[in-house]
Amino acid sequence: MNTNGNLYTIIYTSVIVVLVAALLAFVSQSLKAKQEANEKADIMSQMMTADGIGSKASFQEIGNAAVLEKYAGEISEAFLVNAKGEKTADIDLSDVWSPSLLKAQNNQIKKGELDAVEVPVFKFKNGTTVVPIYGAGLWGPVWGYIAFEADGKTMIGSYFDHESETAGLGARIKDDTAFQDEFTGEMADFTQGRIFEIVKGGAPKEGGKSVLDNKIDAITGATMTSQGLNEAINNWLAVYKAYLTNVKTEEE
Image (cartoon, rainbow, N blue to C red; front, side):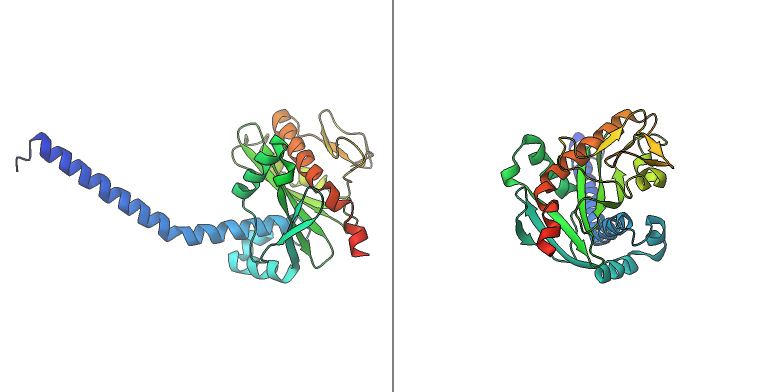
């Protein structure tokens, strides 16, 4: 075959493309299990951080296997609920909901298709309840977890993450533990149209804490990210409203 001809060039290029594609597919498949394990451990550590069981930094130090073991020892039950507060299905205790699953539910929530929405609830042995939220920041999706005491309205803590918010500004929803700590001791006010508010310009404070139970300070210089997180929290807590406002009664 003429190695300088067009036919040779086409065949050679096609073979290289096929080989590279096969190699990439093999590498991707080989790493899939490890990537899934990393994601699961990361989500579990986020939920436990929100619940005050440990810190994200401490969970990173002990590694995936230890995180999974710790989570297994702390979680008591997990299930799906609908917007009426009804339990619809159990979730295997070794499973967590990835951001991609939250995104699918968020699309239905934004469309107002609440009859079709089923959102996850994670209950821990210390009597707390952790629920996820998901929404849009300035540059991409934001998500996270809020932990509630047994009364279904008092917040124990939170942990938030993002895909591509600006470092030093919107990314502080993840990086600034002081911002996440602001949620501790605050309330979800299910009697109001706005269940919770991240307030631009600052919420009134006394002794370093907001004097308004359902309001905290927005992040300075990150207006759009704060607004996006605010909407995500309100949209998702509105779906959980029926469940969380009856959770204490159910336990009694």
